[in-house]
Length: 83
Length: 146
Image (cartoon, rainbow over all chains, first blue to last red):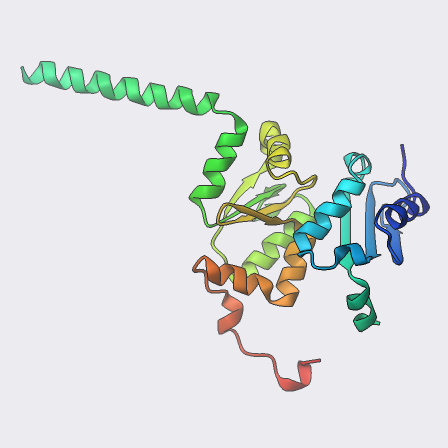
């Protein structure tokens, strides 16, 4: 199964109640390397490790084939401060 | 008498050496990792070795450690398939590299990078008695600050 930006974006948005998700395929199309930015209030009060673990859990199946995965996890508040 | 004693001691020594070897080989990977991460303040499980990382993410972690001049023990998961899967199960984390401080899983490349940028890494190192080299480096000039 080759995953696409659209597929991951939809899944992350849905499962994490994310208000903003950016997915970038950095694999030149083979679907094994992605970078994501997720903005969700589900990250409120969670340290970085817990946030990343949450994302890893959502993508448990996918991460078996995606072997290079970079993630940024922001709360809505943090995202507002950045932009 | 002397000879007898020596032979006896040697045989006890041999037995215990054999025993410890055998038991180490039979130890489940989980226990081996337990020992590794508890016997060293900072441990990095990576692809390749610090002088020749074989993955960009592992390389990034090595560079961060170098910047802070952190003494650490590294383990190459590519040379041990058992360890490669074992470490993922141990920390319940799907990717390599993995960094442990004081026996605790801290994170992979993203987390290390973000902890480095936020200054959190310096604090974590301080907790285990490691002074980051960045603390003794020149403080950033005002105009460089955001």
